Image (cartoon, rainbow, N blue to C red; front, side):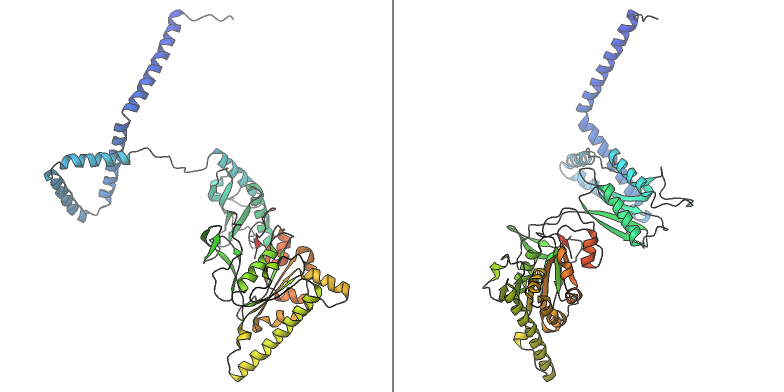
Amino acid sequence: MARRPLPRILSSGSASITRSREIARTAADSATDVLHPLITIVRGLRLLAASGRQKWVATPKERRGPKLFLAAACLLAVALVPYGPILALITVMGAAAWKGRERTPVKTGPDEAESTRLRALYEALVPYFSVADDPEPLFAHGGDWEKAFSGYAFDGDGRLTRLHVSYPAYFTDGEAAARARIEQLLHTKSGRGREYHFAWDEEANRLVMTVLGPLSTSVAAQRFVTAPGETVLGFTDPDAVRRTVPVRDGDTTVDAAPVVWRTGNRSTEPHLLAVGQPGSGTTTLIRSVALQALQQGDVLVVDGSGTGEYGALVGRTGVLAVESGLGGALATLEWAAHETERRLIFANRARQGGHPLPEDIKRPLWILLDRPGVLGHLAAADGRPDPQELLQVPLRHGRAAGVTVVLADQFDALETLGETVRTHTRARVVLGPASPEQITAVLGAEPNTTPPAEVPAGRGYA
């Protein structure tokens, strides 16, 4: 059937209607622009009136009389003051204009993309947080994710930075394997390459996932402001510790949250072991410890790698020796063992006689040994004793004698560390990229965050 043109009267009428609508719309926009100040003031007056009515309703009945009397007195004072009514009118109009101004709408919920992410995350958790015989499942395919996710936050790129998850009470949150599966799933679905912290509240059946920001790597080794017997190993998140220390970060001074290691005769972990990959920052950590130890003690440095990383310490006050060769290292460690025994003997005599400890015994002695595995291999090839055997006395009795031992080595040399070293170096540090299994093997506990695949030198766990 062929299409026929509309009659002339109908086509012209449609054009007139369209033109009339455009004129009306233009007139309405122009009127809105012209009357915008008046609309703002009227909106503000309405809001002020509503606020005043709410306050009047909330006022107890016995206080309404005095308030009415005070308001009447204020109105009378304004009326008697020269130009009082005009000034009062200007004040009211200004308050109404401020109250009725247009504000940026507050975001009250997730947008479409964020809702899609939360929905996908909810669906992925269903197999882990649901059972077939649950009459009212909190997690179910096609269920309401808002009941399970009580809080969430996104960054500018639309990725999750914080998530509160409520899970059913029958979930086995007391098993490490069950928690690890949930953490791995959330880590994968929320975006790789970031560091996540998971806080499990078994009593309330809640899990809080937080994305940690990168820690600063611009703080150089320096003499930190600490008490005697305290050594700063690094810095952590501000909410992880309850103290800060002033540090120089470039040309400015800032307060940072320190990771403090306490040494001395009251320390529960008097010796330290640092482990990492090549270039992870273990040598820099030992140099930082040496710089802090020199404030109140003497330092012995044995560089097993022989790269000259500790040449800047040679000749400093308090540095007793810096050795890199096998012969010098064995002689230095043998002297350290005899010095530890001497300190124990003189300290025992002083206590038995009721005398104060001699000053040379009270001054701390630090033994810093970098790459002992290399020295052990060289000693075995030369038929000489392993340098680690000379550390048995300082490690076992160092706390009572004021002797502290710090060792640093790489992951591939952990098997060469002796039983005495493993037993008495209970303060541990892992630096650089490492798998959760490697971190657990060194620290004796699982890391409390997800270790990223790529981290800068100096970052790790303690």
